[in-house]
Amino acid sequence: MIKVAPSILSADFVNFERDIKMVEKNGADLLHVDIMDGMFVPNMSFGWTTVAAIRPITNLFLDVHMMVQNPERYVDQFAKAGADLIGVHVEATSHIHRALQMIHNDGVKAEVVINPGTPVSQIEPLLPFVDQVLVMTVNPGFGGQKFLPQMIEKIQLLDDLKKDKGYDFDIEIDGGVNDKTVVDCYKAGATVAVAGSFVYGADDPAAAIASIHNATR
Ligand SMILES: O=C(CO)[C@H](O)[C@H](O)COP(=O)(O)O
Image 1: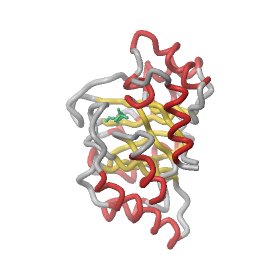
Image 2: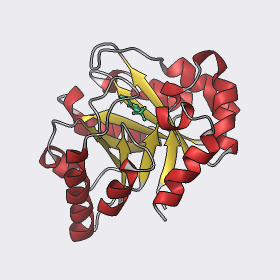
Image 3: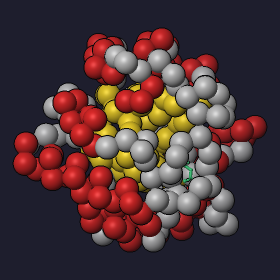
Image 4: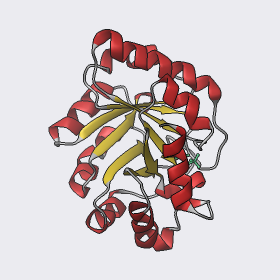
């Protein structure tokens, strides 16, 4: 069964506490926190002070996705704020290995993220060092976009590399995920599913989370 990470990008920003506790009570396995800088992606969300405010109100694992240019500038702040995992985009820095090392040095799990236009070969040298790979299944920056099925091939390739080389990382998918699109991703090797609008836009968020779990049993 895949793990479900509701994305608070689709929550009510003035009711974060209510919306986070709601998914925690209703089957979320972790919480996805999208950081957007208005530069790497054409949208802004929030920063480490928000992560610090969220940390004491939930026991959920905080999966922090930095859509930030030169993320190494801010990795320490997000670690200090209470992130359990920090994801950095390979496209956002010339020093991706250093950024991942910084995350580990802060005692936090490290994730490398690839955009839809980026091939798996670009992160192959990093695979022995990461705890998670995030395959973006939409172009990052906004919730509510349509899932890109061409990304399934990348998930399969990552899973093959994992098995062939004995690597140990989770494969996360993010963008347009629902109880239908998740199925082939799970079959290809995805282990964690981010879902924003599918969960927070649902009349019954508990049923939405359960439907992703049930579709991947
Ligand atoms: O990283 C993101 C956007 O860049 C979000 O996590 C993602 O879009 C989730 O939203 P939805 O499930 O509605 O597609």
